[in-house]
Amino acid sequence: STPQMLEAVAAVLAGIRGAKSSAKVGQRTPVESASVTGDPGAVEAVREVESDLRAVAGITGELRLVPGQPGQPVTVEAVLGEAPKKS
Image (cartoon, rainbow, N blue to C red; front, side, top):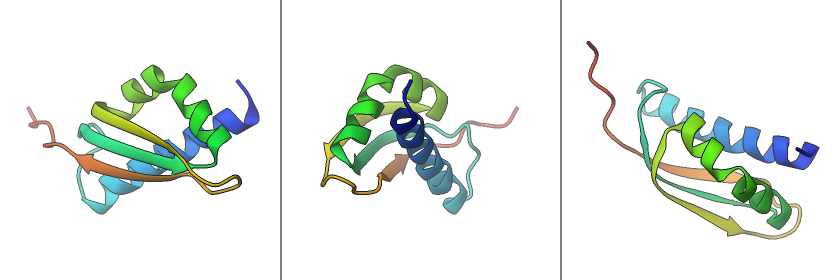
């Protein structure tokens, strides 16, 4: 893993965590879809670890990876699913 990969994945996880926090839902709430835009190298790094990222972030639906301009910061838009029922 490269520093760029770690930075890109950290940015995606932070974006998803932020979306969940803003929505005031638990971190185990599934992500129905997510769109990641940013530097082409960063987006490619995210693509390389997509299955792990899906598992860690709880992405159950579509994950769109959109290469942007070189040097563009990674941004995430997430559509959250229903929070799991508390037992």
